Amino acid sequence: MRQGSTLIASIHTALDDSELVRFEHDLVKQIGEHRSRGVIIDVAALDVIDSFAALTLRRIADMARLRGALTVLVGIQPEVAFAMVRLGMGTGQIPTALDLEEGVQLLAEVAATRNFPSSGSQPQKRT
Amino acid sequence: MNDRTTDHQPVHAAPEHDSARSGPSGHLLSQLVAHLREHRTRLQEEWSQRIQQAHLLTAMTPQEMAAETTSVYDNYVEVLETGNVEALQHYARDLSERIIPRGVETHEVVGIVLLLRDVLARSLFEKYQRDFSMLNEVLDAYEPAANRIANTVAVSFVDERERVIRQQQDAIRELSTPVLPVRERLLILPIIGVLDSERAKQLTEQLLSGIRKHRAKVVVIDITGSPDVDEAVANHLVQTVDASRLMGASVIITGLSPKIAQTLVTIGVDLSKMNTIGDLQGGLEEAERLLGYAVTRKEVDSTS
Image 1: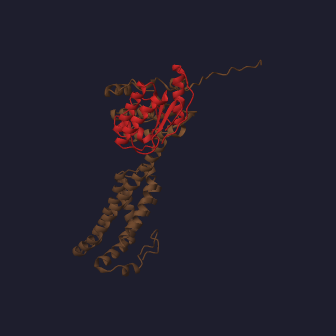
Image 2: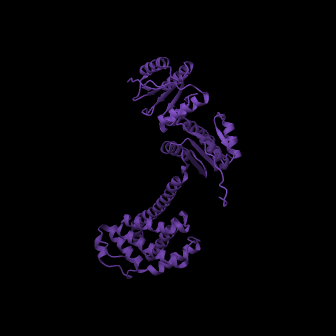
Image 3: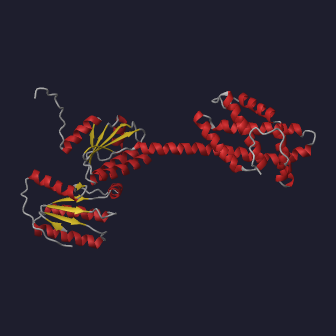
């Protein structure tokens, strides 16, 4: 996970339920720590998004909003997208984008319309 | 044993045919074949007449029919003689390939083969009418072989027909769901013809992979050419729109027919998320607006 004024979290491998919960905690904590305005969650590496994962992603988005950051979901695979719709688990209100680049752009657009101050970036690294 | 072609063979069967098969039925069969070869012209004419009387093969000209009946007759006799069904299958496939495009129906093909069988059986009755037990034996040899031939020809014909149909289906399938990039990040998906669930599924796959490949932001699905969809397909369409959104592309649907609109409302899906516009032109304009394009007509300016 890497961040500027936006926090970028990419999920590299399939996460089980407890890992998802930990991921949720970490992410929400970091939003506060880095005063992030946007969160991008990259799920391009996931072949499967089950209902719990979808729910967790929605929860993260809701919590992030409460803490002042907009969440964008990027990189959903075609098959995953259709399977999710089939099973009736949309991403709710979370905006989605094709890939990381698009996600960053989307956040920039939103920031521009809301006239958020784009604060300086403080690069940091975490696994 | 069959290194010679039977087409237009001399009237009398060569003696080596007799020795080639063993057993009483083999002997009878070769006798029978010799008889059929001997009366080839007469029997074939009789057969052609019966075909005409039955009004079969009306799609063919008399010359074609004469040629086809000759070759069918010769093949028939040959298979009776050799029992080589594979050669017949091959021939029947060839024949079907030739006559299917001419609009020959299955019942006609089966009809003419059965007619030939009857004509030949009749001639056997005639030949052996004085010797009843002999007739019985000959028919014992003849009937299974003849039935096998009728069966083979019919099956080959139907197989060939199905192969043609499958081929056409494949062609249609490949043609049916083009995903066309018209501008950078804008895809158009024109749907023409009936959307069944198989095609709808394929459409979804093509669209989603198209979005990924072209990095599309906006997709216009134009269903002007599809007058009606059933509820399952309508639902599928809505799901496709949702899935596209998950991939970060917004979908505009254009050209919804009144009937499809009715179907969508009837199944009660959430229509608030669907962006629909009356026709393809309007859809493209909306797409361009979403992408930030402004299309202006270039004035012919000769002064500067």
